[in-house]
Amino acid sequence: MSHFQMTFRGLVPSDALREVAEEKFQRVARKFGGLSTCHIIVAREATKSPFGSPYAVRVLLRAGRVRATAEASDDNPCSAVRTAFARAQNQADDARHRPGSH
Image (cartoon, rainbow, N blue to C red; front, side, top):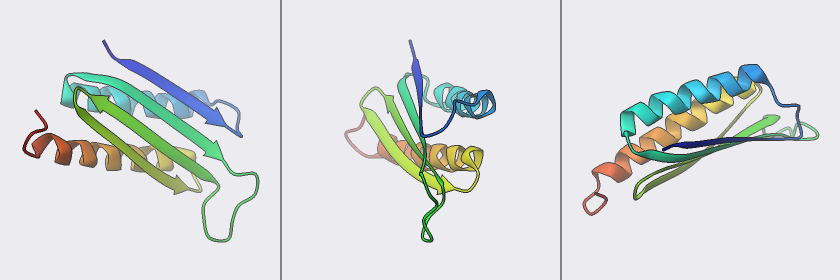
C-alpha cells in the first residue's frame, strides 16, 4: 500500500499542483512497484532572493530499502515539482542498481 502526502508552506494549496504531483507519483509508483511512501513539500519564500526562485520543492520517496530525496526550485511550482521528481527518480534508479540494495 502506498502513502502520498503533500505539504504546502507559504502558499495556498493548489488542485492543479496536487494533480501534477499525483501524476508523477503514480508514474514512479508503477515503475518501482513497491513504492511505499512519497512526501512532497512545496514552499514559497516570502520574498524572491536574487539568487533563487520563489518556489522550492522537496520530494522524498521510499520503496523498500531504496530512499531518494531531491530538491528543485523554479519560478513555476509545477516545473519545480517535475524537476524534483525527475531527480528523485534518477537517484532511486541509481540506488536500486547498486550492489546490496535489493
